Image (cartoon, rainbow, N blue to C red; front, side, top):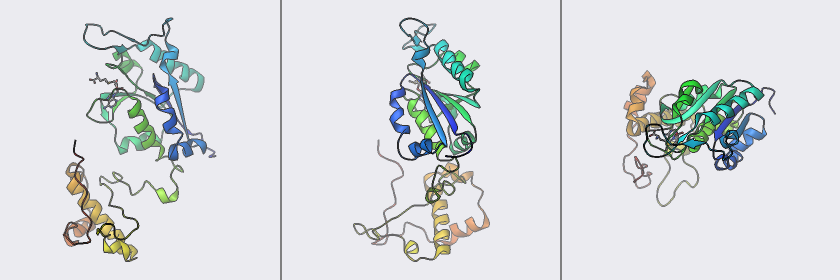
Length: 266
Ligand code: SAM
C-alpha cells in the first residue's frame, strides 16, 4: 500500500453495474488493491426525491427523448462532497465536450479527487453543465448511448499514469502520444509466422540499433497513420536523419511483415 492517498474517482451513473466488474480486473483491479486508485460508483437514482425515483423528464420546448433531471445529480455530487470533501474536477461527459486525449489523462492523473458524471437519454439538464461541472469531456466525435463507456475509458487511461500502477516492464513513457508520435511496432516469438518474419534489427541484439529503428518506425508510422499528429511533432536533427537515412519499411521481402491496415473496414 502506498503512503499517499489514492487517486479517488467517483463515477455518478444510473448504471453502476455496467462498470463495477471492469475496474476489478487486471491493471485497474491491481491498482485498487494496491491502494493507488479508488473508484466508487454512485447510483444517481438513489438521490431522486420523488416516490417513483424519477431521474429524467420530458424536455422543455418539446422534442424527442428524455432529459436527465438536475436535482438528483446535484444531490448525489453534493452528498459525496459533504462526506469526503470537494473535487478537484467535476467532469461531465458529452459529445460536445473537449476531446479527451493523453494530455488530459496526464492532467487528471495528478489530481486527488475526480467526479465523473455519466449522461443517458437525450442528455443532461443544462444547469448541471453550467453550475456543477468544471469541465465537459468528449471521447470522440460520435454519440454513445451513455457516458459509462466514456467513464471507463477515462478511468483506464488515467489509472495507468498513476505512479506505481504499471510495473517497470509496462512503462507508459515510450507509449503512443507521449511525444506527439504513435508507438513503434512490436513483435514476439516466433521469429517467423506463416512466412512473415521479424525485422532483422530486432533479432540482432544491438541495443543502439534497436533504439534507432524504433524511433524511425515511430516517426514513419505517425506520418503514415496520423499525419495530423506528425505535423505537431518538432523533428529533431536526429529524427530528420532517421527519416532520411533509414530505408522505407515496406520494401517487399518474402519474410517482411505485412503492414497493418490503416483502418478497420466498417
Ligand atoms: N443528445 C446528445 C447529443 O446529441 O449531443 C447525445 C446524448 S447521448 C445519447 C447520452 C449520453 O451519452 C450523453 O449525455 C453523454 O454523457 C454520453 N455520451 C455520448 N457520446 C459521448 C461522447 N462521444 N463522449 C462522451 N460522452 C458521450
